[in-house]
Image 1 (spheres, rainbow, N blue to C red):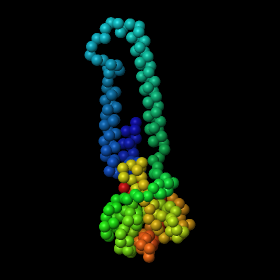
Image 2 (cartoon, rainbow, N blue to C red):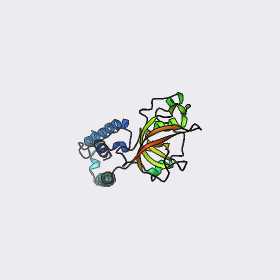
Image 3 (spheres, helix red, strand yellow):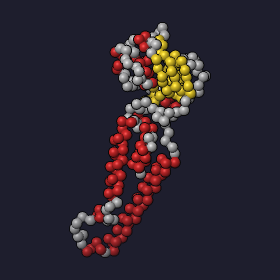
Amino acid sequence: MISIVTLGLAIAGQLTLYISPGSIWFACAGAVVVLIGAIWSFTLAPGEEDDHGHDHGAAQEGADASAAGSAKRALGLVGTVTAGVAASGVVIAALVLPPASLSVELAMSRADTGGVLFAGADTPTLGVADTTTFGIGEWSTVFATASRPESYDGSTVTLTGFVTPGQDADAVNLTRLVITHCVIDAQPAAVPVSLEASSYGTGQWIEVTGTVAADENGGLRVIPESVVEIDEPGDPYEY
């Protein structure tokens, strides 16, 4: 049942709400193998798994053997029904409840874990990197670790994320959850954006176009030229 749900989510393009794109092929391959095994198991005749290819003797044809066989069949039926109900519940829940991204509250609860370096983390610390393809994950690493922050002053950015509270009243954090393998290891990445804290509610998705600015203390933040409210994207994570 889980295999069917996995393949269904993959076909619908929603499996990335649970695992990274690079892991989809592995999950789908595993689901196919499990389905093949399940289908093959139905080709076995009932009781065939107990046929060892030898005669157990006439004594097993007595009343005791018959009673033992009945008890075994009853236990097997109970186990089958229990497993079927549990599996059906999982499938029905997956079909009825739409896939959902991780919550803003979870991102904020993990924001204080600190020390997370994302893709391209070692490049900015050595000098100026090519930032044209950077997302919030890479920029958050630049902001936290760049040894020459002034070198990024004036860099243009277009970033999409959701709003979380910033450290100052004149700034908010533009946040995105970054996944390495699956949602279990999701970690928040954030960059400060010069916006009034009351301008947008926590959790509001926005697209920010602007430039990176360095202050006299060596800190970096994004100075927005345009801010557009948007709906949560179909793929809300970075990888």
